[in-house]
Length: 228
Ligand SMILES: Nc1ncnc2c1ncn2[C@@H]1O[C@H](COP(=O)(O)OP(=O)(O)OP(=O)(O)O)[C@@H](O)[C@H]1O
Image (cartoon, rainbow, N blue to C red; front, side, top):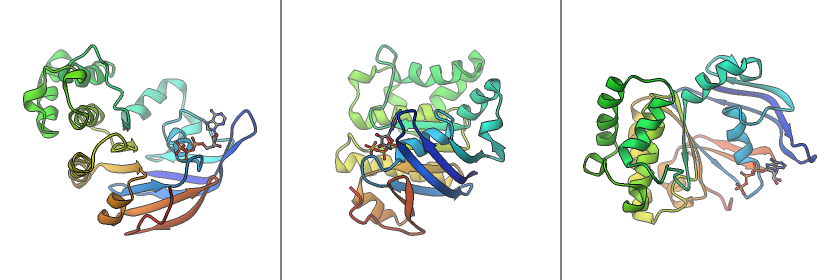
């Protein structure tokens, strides 16, 4: 699904955020990315969705070289990747249903499709009865469920989640992790940046540890090892 071949990213100010990194993520995988602040985790994510371009090396997504994509192909790439954020990033003026609908509208979905898909996906994330609430009227866990609904509604190949439980209490975090696991079981590849050591240690998924832009550890059934 994703291949990095000897990828380096040097920002304009000379900071080398990613250094000669080679990485493969297979379709259907669930992988955690861990590492201290400044390790390059966000840069890795941004390289996948073409928010930043590599200084050297190749990034492939679903068999396509993202550097060779034409500008008009970039929306296609972004549609195939659902993003979930620590701070939810919902539109505050829109209800749960409208937030999810908006993600469909911008991809040109018909009104009929929107009417069919929004309730179905809200039900899938356990928010059937909260469709008409604004973000401010929902708990953090509920807001993150809306964030996940928005990420999956376009049926992406992959979900990239950037510390999705960072603002949630432990019980709510586990509910959200269970939802991600269910989405993964249905076939969606998941790449998750996290500092939640207890979650990483319990789930025994692949763990990719970054430090100074380099992969220092990449283990199947891995654990969290003091990467704070
Ligand atoms: N736009 C930018 N311009 C210049 N330097 C940047 C930029 N974005 C990130 N960096 C630098 O690149 C390095 C890697 O940053 P990155 O945000 O990828 O790390 P991170 O592992 O996601 O950190 P955190 O856990 O704090 O979010 C850091 O030294 C950071 O200061």
